[in-house]
Length: 265
Ligand code: KIV
Ligand code: NA
Image (tube, rainbow, N blue to C red; front, top):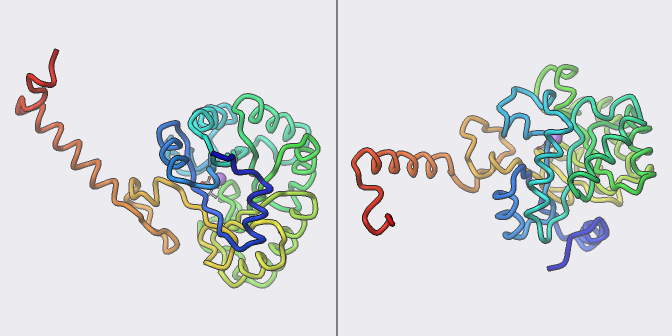
């Protein structure tokens, strides 16, 4: 199987083939997603919520992100693997950003990094790019800044914020990012950005007129029952399936139906 590369992602945009992307945080899940043909795997800092049970993405550490990235990389045969730099590991200090970036690349074997923000983190992104590390941008709803926004509601509905987002997207492309994620913004704005940029634009809650889609895998598989934003399509109800299986197992153990003679040595 041929590995997905930044060049292939660009070629996909050029020929109008949509890019599929999902999060992954562990070996077993990453094997399934890679085997099923996903183009890009994101070791998202949403691991802070999904894997660790935190309210926000702020607490997850660089070491924890590296652990998740190592597990995913061991499983992957084809997908392009992008890792989020976590909160506090890159903002406001380009030397520290480069140090964090190099650690993730060296210790996990990841293919690229994702950083949240535009002009504010230009120096950090530029510095990382000079080391030959591909960077994916992330604009719109940026969960590492949740306490600045105050809510997880749709971003860039006002003209000023929309204008700033367009400028940031153009800046990210100009300094050399290979792609940009747009999270939870009006689809009209996302369409405009995807048309203006030559690099791929991947949306989450950004409508259909972008170059690809990303979802948190636990959300789209219905493992996580509570989270139900409009943009989320559930492709399975694994919460029910897994709960039924476990209830069944508990019952079998209690009733001495498991194990049978055939299941024993
Ligand atoms: O961490 C994450 O899951 C993300 C995606 C939602 C884009 O950044
Ligand atoms: Na993230």
